[in-house]
Amino acid sequence: MSNLELYVDSRFLSPYALSAFVVLQEKGLPFAWHGVDLDGGANLLPDYAAASLTARVPLLVEGDFRLSESSAIAEYLEARYPAPAVYPQDPQQRARARQLQAWLRSDLLPLRQQRTTEVVFLQPSPEPLDAAGQQAAAKLIRVAEACLAPGAANLFGDWCIADTDLALMLLRLVNNGDPVPPALADYARQQWQRPSVQAWLAQQHQATN
Image 1: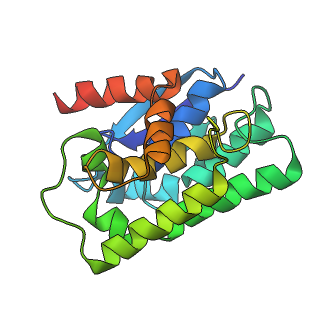
Image 2: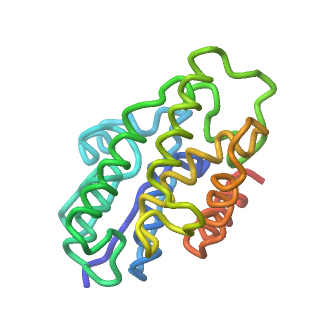
């Protein structure tokens, strides 16, 4: 097995680095991680920017191969190391999981701006959501309720990486005390107890304390 390395933000606040980290943990793949000082602009330095292509985190390195963007990393690792799976085996469910991931990464900008991941990992925001933020929150709740069957612990029966991504987005509201239906809040909190997520939280605690 090739040596795997994952570059994440040095404060462990990136939702996308978390997603890639969880995939590696869930697959039981040994890897080394490296913190990148985003606040200090380390991601813009020529060597890192050239390696990552997008000058962002996460960045996966396997030998001479380098890959950025968390969804691409997840799909690559799923193809290269199929078991245990982090996506549903059914093609249609797998497509729906990827659809949800793509949407979470491309939509809900007002919510992501007004409820940053500092709300999830560090402390609540004292500012109320503005009209755009409320609209984005309502959209998130509508989509989550449409995707998660009543009483279900996971989106597609067994856990998949889309569960972690959706839980993190919901926790932007839950951890800040914004209104979230109890069933969705319980789902998000339960997802946060997975050992793979707890491993990230342990690193994040060390990085910020």
